[in-house]
Image 1 (cartoon, helix red, strand yellow):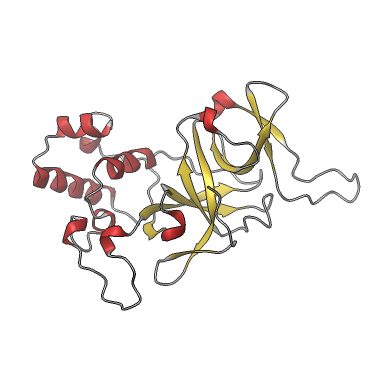
Image 2: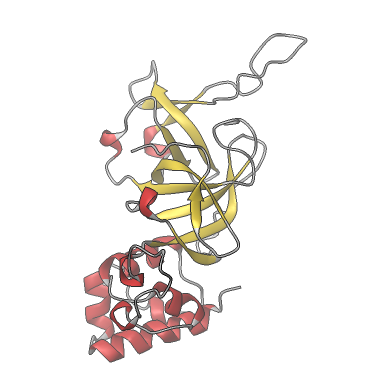
Length: 243
């Protein structure tokens, strides 16, 4: 489990090493003033803002304290099979809170929820910004329960491509659905892949439902379905990646 105060101490160590004042840090990152002085943990959005602003930091060091502070201090991998250096690796935060592919589980939306580790997204998902574990079966067989979805945050909701899969976050739940055009102009139609039906009525168990676009607080495009092996390397499992 990540030690929140220790992680903040490393951030303070980093900005001191760079000669950056707290005020300048808040301005550069867009992070709320005083967050480093609070006892609460860092939100996922805060962590992502920090990584995107200071790309030179070694995320493994920030999360665990292991290795060098800066990526430029890392050595080239020694394995003959390696085709790129550690500087070129794409490490993204893995959040292990519930991300449901159904409507039977509630997402962990605690703003202090921390990544459980940093994982190597590999060449398939160099544009990924986060990864989350999937639960539920409404998107089966595309996304099996227990697998990990590689995600890219979508800032502009107008850029949604119908027929693609997205992680949709509201104030009440976080789900993966295939978005289609709704009959209501201010809504999206959230569809499941699993077409299993009730024997008694013949109706879909996982029926499509409307989501008001303004109720969506964050939106991520699902780039693909992945899993982690024992060496903490993420590999593709479903044979394709959505871009």
